[in-house]
Amino acid sequence: MFQSPLRNPLIKGQKTYRDVTTQILDPLLSKPGKFWYMGITLSGGAMLFGLFMIFWTIWQGIGTWGENRTVGWAVEITTFVWWIGIGHAGTFISAILLLFRQRWRNSINRSAEAMTLIAVMCAALFPLIHLGRPLLTFFIFPYPNTRQLWVNFNSPLVWDVFAISTYFTVSLIFWYVGLIPDIATLRDKLTKGIKKSIYSFLSFSWTGSARDWHRHEITSIMLAAIATPLVLSVHSIVSMDFATSILPGWHTTIFPPYFVAGAIFSGFAMVLTLLIVARKAMNLEDFITVDHVENMNKILIATGSIVGLAYMTELFMAWYSGVQYEHFALMNRVKGPYAWAYWIMMICNIGSAQLLWIKKIRTSLLATFILSITVNIGMWFERFVIIVTSLHRDFLPSSWTMYKPTIVEYGLVIGTISIFFTMFLLFIRIFPVISISEEKSILKIERACAGRKHDNHE
Amino acid sequence: MPAANTTTMNDKKYITLCFNDEGPMLQAIRKLLESKEIILDVQTPFPVHGLDKLLSIKRSRIPVGGFFLGILGAVSAFGFMTWVFTVSYPLIIGGKPFFAAPSFIPITFEVTVLFAGVSMGAAMLIRSKLKPDIDFEPVDERITDNMFVVLVDKNGGNTDIEKLSEVLAGIKIMEIR
Image (cartoon, rainbow over all chains, first blue to last red; front, top):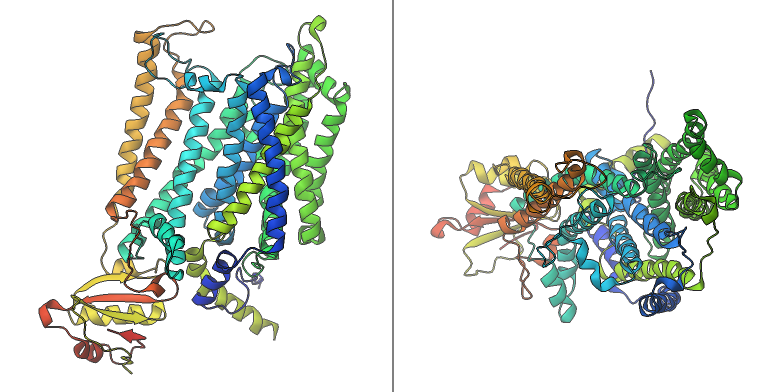
């Protein structure tokens, strides 16, 4: 008879409840190590450079960028879509995997959710400065005004505003609801001082009462239920910024699912990049095990393959449609002046995901770390290819031109990456990176699992 | 073996029973309910399954509230956009009809989720009376760590520590006070 092999425990070692609390809170209650200081200095320095470039853009205007009349969207919108995509893994892990009762999510959901919030903030920066006059951003919100004019609700750009602000708000609520019991743990561990007062304030006087837990659980599961379609809708709507236009290379119905898969693909890659370092630096290897990494890698294979299939489908449809504009746009990607970007995208996204079929690579932390970075480079180039190659050779050959980013634009990309890392480094010093109460709720099962595994071995 | 470590008297209206795991706590709750004691509250470091049923906590109606608020969000978003494009400022955009229902769907959906999400989050805080408090004092600092606490009403002096120790004989209790 077939017997399925016992899976490895999700929490290593025979831990007690106290051990879980202590080990997760330890990095917060002790002084940061020298790597943390090195990290924050480096990313903080780069962040200052980025902030200066944002200031320079606003001060001088968007003429400091490489955009021209033909290529009106480029690196900024590329990076905007990239960040929004990265954010998606957090909600996927916390909402969709909760509904599927995937217990391994318990040790990664907190940091992935935080990553979502930070990534969405980084993303939101771009449309803001892209306006040229950020002070007029409020024009996008439908409020009664003296011009007696409303925003155009038929436009995907307006949908985007609603989608992203809803996404941010609901993710924030979801994240904070989960954090409340853990902040209470932190509050009770501190004896006195300003820190205790702050955490007392933030813990909303949580007692751990059975009724409160009951409501907490129901609210979490319901928020997961509504966040699930939400996460799928957000990147679908972002993709409609392109798909509802009539530009060859953008005007395709495949975009929403293709963008959502790509978003989860790059998001998981970013979670891996962060957690492979964090588990080591923060001594959390017992909670974020190699099995966690392998599970995430399996999701990379699935989503990466969907993305690969979408690339092939795009090429096939360009040929099969018989539309010469579509055909030209796609061939221009493959062998036009931006072919290098197209091939970086193809190699990084299809290649790295397919390598993960090999178990040795999938379970190797170093290989995963390198591949996760490769994936995100590839995913950045995917958006660059979609935006720039479609725009730079449009219907009118006399307006064909090339686009080259300026130093200011490089500064903005590096700037948001460093804002992201700086905020993540601050987050791991302020809040527990792993959900303590959720880890405790699966502790018994995992302990039993580890015991059985041990017995079988002997 | 009743392990009553701390038996100092206090002027609180309840007796605190502390356990170091969920198993003995659930056993104790069953015994307490059998002997008709009044359980004021049970505080645990994580949600203990089966506790809801044992304490006959009614299923929260937060999802119902979220559902109706979601519907309110959907109706107000769709209604507002319809009003804007048919009454307030009809504008021809790309030759589409004024009432272009399909293109109202994304925003309707987002506002639905926003209303439902925010209302459920707020409902949880309000129903559980969770509010920021700088000087909050928990019943015991260890509840959020590794302690499971049952608060039993003294019932006007009818219930005291000795009586409880008798009722719970044989259950592993860490502290009783």
